[in-house]
Length: 131
Image (tube, rainbow, N blue to C red; front, side):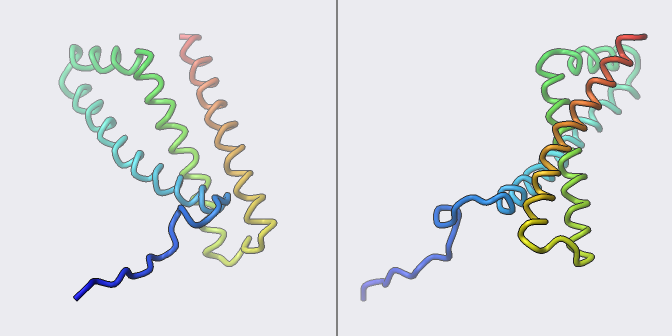
C-alpha cells in the first residue's frame, strides 16, 4: 500500500514577509535571547559575590569588544521586546488592529528601538567617560 502525500500547512516559504510577521518572529527571538542573556547576569552576580578577582575578570570580559557587542545586542533585544510588548498590550486592549495602525506601530517600534538603544549607550558612554 503506497503512502499518500498529505498537503502541508502554509509556512514561511508560502507567505511574503510582512512587517507583522517579521515583528512577531523577532519578538520570539528576542525573548529567547533575553532568557539566555539572563545567564550572563547570573554569571556576573556570581563573579561579584566571588570577590575582587572574579569581578575584575568579569569586568574585563564585558569591557572587551566582543563583550561590548554582546551587551549592545542584549540591550537592543531588551528595548525591542519591551516596546513590542507594549504594542501587544495595546492589541490586548482592542486598539490598533486596523492595517495602517499595525504598520505604523510596527515601524514606530523599530525606529524607537534604534533611537532608545543608541541613546542609552550614548548616555552610558558619556557617564562612564566622566568618571
